[in-house]
Amino acid sequence: MIRNYKTTILLCLIGTFLLPVSISLHGQSTKKTPIDTTFLALKAIPNTQKKVDDLTHLFAKRAKQRQINYAIIDSAINIAQRIDYTQGIGYAYLKKGLVARRNYSYYKAIKNQKLAIPYLEKTKDTVNIIKCLNSIGIAYRKVNIVDKSFNNYFDAYKLAQKIGKKRSMAIALNGIGNLFTDTKKYNNALYYFRQALDLEMSVNNTLGMEYDYTNIGEAHLFLANYDSAHFYIQKAYDLSLQNKREYGTAYETSIFGKIYQQEGKFKESNKQYKKALELFFKIKNPRYIANTLINIGSNDIKLNKTDEGVKSIKEGLKIAQQIGSKENVVAAYENLASYYSKIGDYKRALQNYKSATSFKDSILNSEAQKELINTKIAYETYQKEEEIKELEVSNRISKKLAESTFKKFMATIIVSVALLLALLVVFFLNSLPHNPNNSHF
Image (cartoon, rainbow, N blue to C red; front, side):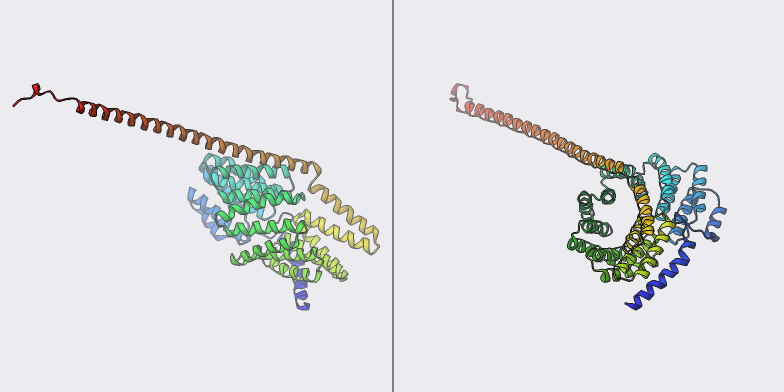
């Protein structure tokens, strides 16, 4: 236990010094971008479609290596525009938006993926249009613009349904479910998560199934169904190990921490949270580093380790403010307000409570919740309309089949009657008496 705690403190200190340098408000690097010799070499060659594709690929590759250089993708877009390479423009904007979203630059993500869609429509690239719509839905959700998030998820779902893209349908359904989780409509969320799981299971997509199990487990956690929550999170955790997905393993470990925390088992909760924290530092995920530090601090306060707890919460708050993670800022302020209230420091308690309320109000207002209910009705209406359309098609097919069968039946009867009459005529003719006068010997 002591050894784990020392490791955590060391990691926190590393985070204290390195995170402010490595991330800015929207997760972009503040360091000077190193010279990329591959980029320089590509810039020197003539402008062709292949050059655009290679630049786009290089940008995505560097982003995975955490060396984000928007100059690369901007160069790809400029060249594609100059040579009128429509597909290249659309795909480059898509990649630029995806990288921006994954690095917490949500408005940049929305802007670029909206720019991508018209070019993708010109080339009839339906799959990437769906990818754009789902990604825009995620970005709008992250900045708490609920109605626009739902509309993009819904459009992605309808388009994916038309071309039978089940994985994309599942992504959209999970997104809609997450919107309901955000507004504490957990049973509604479970409805969409279960639909998504059915789709992922039908195509044996274990990565998608892991995500679905996690979402279902979290919804049960919020409903205080702890046994169900543990069951589904364990399923997700096992799949993350099978898929060798460190992010999934880290996140699901943190959910185990949350389950134990809700059950009042704070020591076991911190044990899980500290395991998760090491993994989040390893994969450099500041949002969940902040969240995990806040939860460890909350547990420490409940275990009467108040100094350590407050320090951990403040460290999480600092990181959350740097990356603009409002939900974590709210969690930190709420925990600090609760602590200061308990020790009788009402002035600080009130300050933190006001800060929490201010951020919370900016996250989701009552109008957004009303809009979400309207979007739920829209989805259900669409589903019913689709069922009616399918039933109408089925009825038309059944009617045509019945008409065809009847026609065949009538034709068979007519042919049978004709044959019977022909046989009767032959029989009648054969039964007539033979006239010997007509014989010749």
